[in-house]
Image 1 (tube, helix red, strand yellow):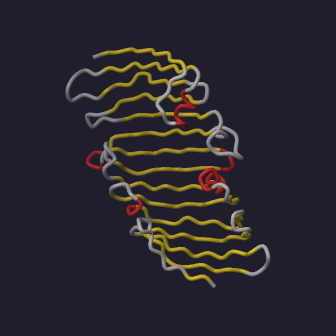
Image 2: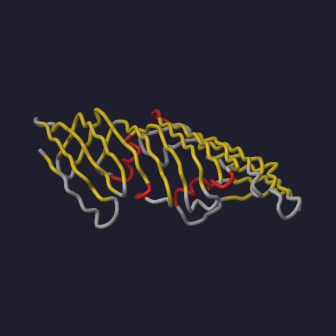
Image 3: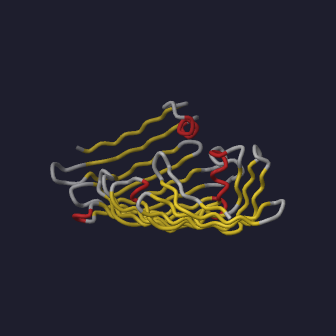
Length: 238
């Protein structure tokens, strides 16, 4: 087959708030693909998506052991999804055939507040198994939307590996922060100078942290926490 398609839409909705925000207004899709027959890859000559807040492009080949795709994407402003931050988020990458290992992924994303994430490694085409390294850094305040009215300020550095069927149990590596601050207004607690390392392995997080209470004194917390229900923990606070 050999197909060229152009679609224009207005006020598209799928019932998911964040996705609907991206699709709101005018959506334009331009697609041009071809395939010579069985055993040959799909050739993507053009795949362009444009909305008022998101643009994305991809081109290359996919399938038949000859995958070689490149893509770019840009979200115009992260503010609607991360209160307190503004500015664009960009992503780019390559997806190539890796023989028996499936697909080779090399991806990079950048955003406001010094956010950087690099993903590299291999994955089966259906992502039933992966072997990926994920490194970078991100502002802790990106989580504030999820934990409100609690809030955190600082930076998280991460160096992780996901090996096997994607799940928390497949994640290993470290996440750390230094000099962070947390406010828990319901409890009237402010925590300063938070220095913490979380070591992930085998479905468990080993926490080692020190923090200073605003009214004075320092607390040290350490111990394991399970990453699956019922989230058993054995933490010691001093």
